[in-house]
Amino acid sequence: MSGPAYDDTNIFARILRGEIPCKKVYEDAHTLAFEDIHPQAPVHTLVIPKGKYVSMRDFAARAGDDEIAAFVRAIGKVAALKGVEDDGFRVLANTGINGGQEVPHLHVHVFGGRPLGSMLTRN
Image 1 (cartoon, helix red, strand yellow):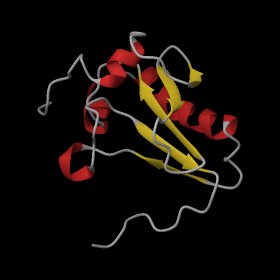
Image 2 (tube, one colour):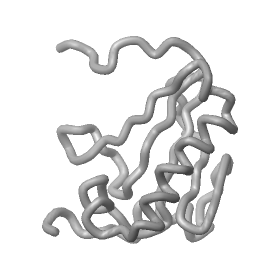
Image 3 (tube, rainbow, N blue to C red):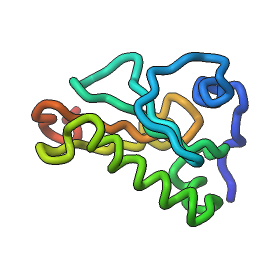
């Protein structure tokens, strides 16, 4: 699999090592979920795998079935814990420069708590 190499100094790697604190929402053997420090909705939680994966493509190519299942289940658990599973929520994973990815560690945003509008803004 080609693509950028994993950077152990990225902020999520540092959070996983306990070097930077986070407001934890959920954790299991394979995932960590925590509040975004710049929320864009009443619910804005990040879900990350604990493994060293740069993007969704990288994760899909290299993660084990147990890691993939845990990651998907963690997203659902976060929606339930944050009280948005019934009213609805959005899951967003940015990949690469054009996708708007800012941290080179796979992460999904779970948004909710209000109507979220269109998926993309028009330019």
